[in-house]
Length: 170
Image (cartoon, rainbow, N blue to C red; front, top):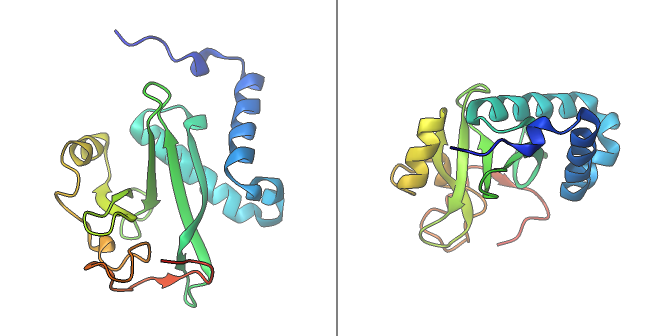
């Protein structure tokens, strides 16, 4: 039997303080979230959807800037980096929103088998998809893997479909 999740039974104020501390540690953006409230609330919606889909507490999911991939017509806006910290195993997973899934799917990040960069390695829509991807990593690489800007420039998958952010390096 799985032991009860201590974070689920902690008082609301304690959980809120822990969540704020986790965001402060993860990103300087937390301090300025009120200057881009639309982005902050969109990311909160993403975090809620991820927490619900994978059955983790809401404060186990943090959504911050993806400093590797740029989006938008001119490729100047960072995307969302989703970090899930599993309270039961202490394992950390990272995902990106799947641009083809309209908020209902994600791209699991993992190591490229060629250059070892952290790139999309599986499409995830359900907990079962996540389990299958973790069981057989790299079995069904999504199209987004090919050309992801995190690949080293000499990698066989380095076809640059995304624009790099100005400070990204190989």
